[in-house]
Every structure is written in C-alpha cells, then in structure tokens.
Amino acid sequence: MLQKSYSEGVGAGFSLAENVRFQLSKTRVNDLFIRWLTQPQTQKLVQQLIKDAKDGKQNNLIAQPNAFFINKMAVSGVSQSALFSSPNKKTQGPASPPKTDPFHDLKLRIPEELSQSLTQSQILQKKCHVEKAQNYEQVPQFYFPNQEINLQLQSEQNKIINEIFGKSDLIDATHFEQITTILCGLCKYTTKILMTAIEGNATKISKSGFLKYWNQHLAQKEPKNRCFQIFKKPKNDYIEFEDFKPFMKILLQEHPGLEFLQATPEFQERYADTVIHRIFYHLCRKDNGKITWRDFKQSNLFDILDLVAKEDDINKIRQYFSYEHFYVIYCKFWELDGDHDFHISKEDFSRYSSHGLSRKVVDRIFDQIPRRFRSEIDQKMSYEDFVYFIQCEEDKTTIQSIEYWFKVIDLDSNGIITGFEMDYFYEELKQRMDCLNHEPILFQDFVCQMVDLLHPDNDILFKMNHFKQNLSVCGVFFNFLTNLNKLVGYENRDPFQVRNDIVDHPDFTDWDRFAFQEYVRLAMEEENQEQGEVFEGDNIWDNDDQKQL
Image (cartoon, rainbow, N blue to C red; front, side):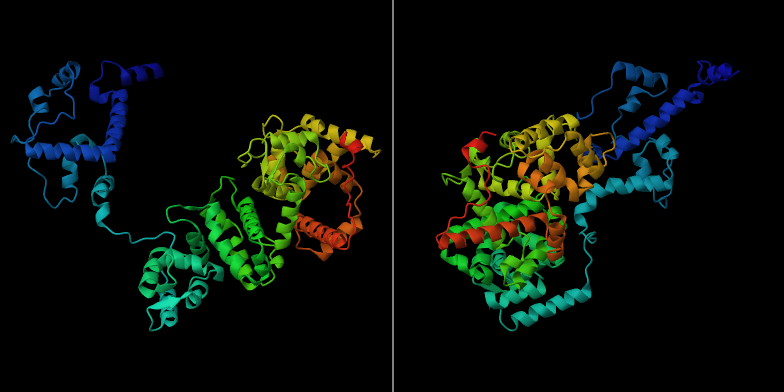
C-alpha cells in the first residue's frame, strides 16, 4: 500500500504540477533565486542591465541559452521570440495593479510565481535589503553601540575646558596638565605626549586645536581608552615597544624617585627598556610585540600609571616600575654576561642560579622551544630574552610562565606531559642529588605528590588546563623537574619561615619575594665590598669538581 502511494506520487503518470519531486525542486530553486537576487553583486548586475537597456546598448553580460534550454522552453509553451524580446518593445499584458499597492514596484522585479509564494513582510524585507546598498552612504551614522552620549557630562566637560583656557586661546604645558588629569583622567606624565599628538612639538596648545582633537579622538571614550589612544601611533590599533619610549623619557626626567639616575644616562636607558619589557611580558599575551586594546583593557597598567603619578617612592610601585626590581634583573644579567657584550651564551646561561638548571633544560631553552629568541646573534640570549626568562623562572604562578615551562617539559609538543617526560627531566636531578649525598626523592613519590596537587583526569597525563586551574602549585611541579636548588630548597623548607614571610608581606607575589631577597643580598654584597670584605655567596657549584656533575 505504501509502495503504491509512493509510486502514485512520483510516477510518470502524474502531471508535472502534481509531481512531489518537482514541487520540492521548484521551492528550492525559488529560494536560491531569491538569495541570488538579494546579493550585492546581483544588484550591481541588474542595475547595469537596466541602464544599458534604457540606453539601447547591446549587453553581453548574460550568455545566450543553449539549444537544449530553448527546446525545453518551447515544449513548455514559451516562444524564443518572447524570451529574447527587447524590453523597449511595447507588448500587451495584463492591466497593472493599483498604484496604492506599496509592493507593486518590487513585485515587477520578481517573477510572478515567486512573488505569489512570498508574504508581504518578506517582500518588504527583500526591498529594504535591495535599497540598502544604494542609500547607505546618504544616511549619516546616528547609532553608536559602544557609546552613550551623556549631555550632562558633555556640559561639564565643556565647562572644564572653558575654565582652564579662560579668555586665552593658548596655554602652556603647566596649564595643559589640568586638561590631562582633570578632563581626560590621565596620568600627569602623559601631558607632553598628548600635546605632541595635538600640535606636534609646539610648546603651547590652542583651544581650537585641542577641541578638534578632543571631539575626534577622546570625547566619547573612557579614560583607559584615551590612554591607549595617545600611546599608540594614529595609524595602528596596537601599541608597540617604541611607543612607550616617549613616556619613559618624561618619567625619568620628572619623577622625583628617579632623579638619581639623571647622572647615569646608560642606566636610564636600561631602566626604561626593562620597564617596557616587563609591561609586554604581562600584557602582550600573544608575545608578538603588539599590545591590543583588549590586552590593555584587561590589564592593570592604567591604574599603575595613576599610582606612579601619585607616589614619589618608585620602589613602592612593585609592578613594572620598581627600580629595585630593575636592579636585580640587571645585576643577574651582568653576572652571567662574562664578556659584557650584552648577550649571553649557553655556557654563560648555565651558571644561572648557581648551576641550578639542568643541562636538559638549558638545551631546550637555547633550542628556543619555549620561546624564540629576539637576539640578532645566533645561539645568544639578548637582554630582552633574559628579562622574559627570569620572570618565568622566578614566578611560576603566571599564565606566561606556565606556558613557557610546559613547552620545555612537553618533549613531543602534543599538549600533554606524560610520566615518561617527567622521568626524563627528573633523572638528571636525581643523579646530581646522589653525587651531593642528598637523599633522593623517589620518582613514584614525586608523581603521587603531583597527582594530588593537580588532579589530572587520566592517571599521570597532565594538560595545560590542569596547571591553569591550580596556579599556586605549578611552581612545585616545574621546580622538581628543572631546578635542583629549588627542589632541595622545597624539601628542606621551614614551614614556619614560609608562614612568617606570607604574614609579613601578604600582598607579595613570588616575583616580589624573589626580587626583595635578591636586592637585600646584592645590597649586603656591595656594602661588604666597600668595607674591603669579600662576599662569596652560596655558589656551591662554582668549583671544578661540582661543574663535572
């Protein structure tokens, strides 16, 4: 019975109009034709054809149909002369619909069968879509999805501008600083940068010039977005390394906490570079040298800039700008750079942390597995590379550090750290502990500790998300596989001392604690040298016998 009904519905005995397959195909073709008709390229083609037809020009944009198509049209009752009749030739046809029909013009452009299958709302939608490409340039933008014009705020801003400029049309940098801080809500050290953006190198700013720049670039933006706009180049939508240089130059000249550096221009340059490198380490998530608006918006750099303007002691601004942190980084680099060519070789680098890093880790870093070097000299680590490395090494609670060390341990780069890869790196550290008569930690015990800390889904297969979900314990995992000194230090740690450190400095990060301890050590070393004493430190690996390990 079902088979009979099916054959009756699609069989050759039925007329074409009653054939089910024909009806489905017809509906699909009509839908595709409407889609094609509403495409911008189609609209341009149709407009060109209509224009040529009105001008009486011969248009070859549409090819003549083949003989098979003409024969089919003849069978269906359409003559070839009717198909290719000129649009200028008067033909008799049905009376036109009343002009009161709002869809009359559009229906004339759509075949009768298609227009009957469309509702009036669909026809109106197609008409709006067709006319959009023709009239969009004539209508000015009146909706700003990311902006809400606050008339009261706009009035207050105009009042501030009039009060600062007063009756004068020109103001100098001293008065313009009020524009920067009060009106724009920016750090006072960006005053000269804003003046340069408005009037170039002029020492005074005109009211008309400021209003033009203000209305075009800053008026409808929040302070953080304004800060981003004045740092970046006008042609770019991101901040580059060089874009921070003017700000750092002004900061070094005007900040009271950095006055002592004015006598040493070389240290000024190194300090500025270090600050910018630290900013890019935290903000530039793609590590491509470009800080986008999204990176800038999600960071705390804008708030830190505000603190820099309010705080005279630069060392209290531990993020990015601390001179003590710069001093630690620079001295660490200087200790390793034996020939002082500002590049570190693999042999120099192996001495970091008193030869604490394993050879396998050093090889992976200089193979540029975790991060490609920015150095122009092959197989040499530049200062920028070292700044990135030391932040990853001394604070393993950041996303950048986790990704860095994960790539070091992940030998096959498949996104999974297995037990084999862990054992590969742990084996060298275990041998070194045996040579130093340290009681080695069994690998099985180490693995159990890591499983308890990170809770992997499948046995000992550690993925990136396991570390990102447990940032506070990632340092333990990577230190056990990469750094002998930190492994031994963790096993011999005094829990009471750790607790006291946290109580004394509850807001310190791992990096802050490292920089604080190293700065104290360097200060003591310098003081002892001034008194003629020799400070040997705790470099237990510098003798020839230990270097054989």
